[in-house]
Image (cartoon, rainbow, N blue to C red; front, side, top):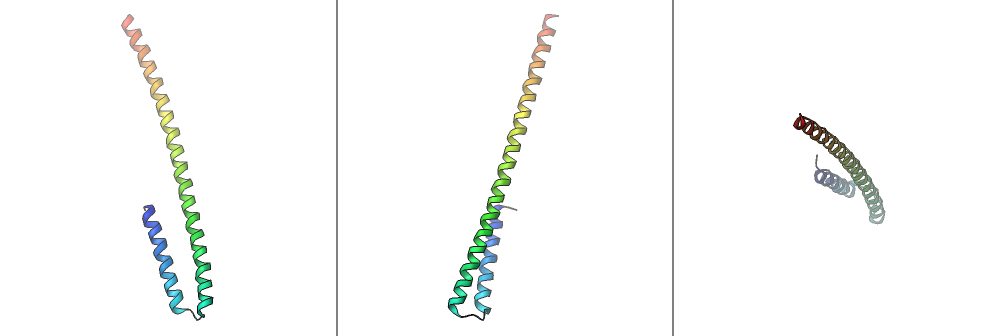
Length: 93
């Protein structure tokens, strides 16, 4: 699932919840605005937390990929060095 779809879904859910909250709430306007403001801040905090976790996860995956690539490069260099030595030895014989 792409990040854009997740964020779009979260925003759509927020908008739908806010709309139904306004339509069906038995509160007066000023109380409703305070409630909406509070919920908006809660949702914004949730989205920030999820985005932060997503970035941390992505960073961890990138670090792992870099480490694995470095290990593969080292193994390739080692194999190449052994092949060079074998070729030199075979050329002398």
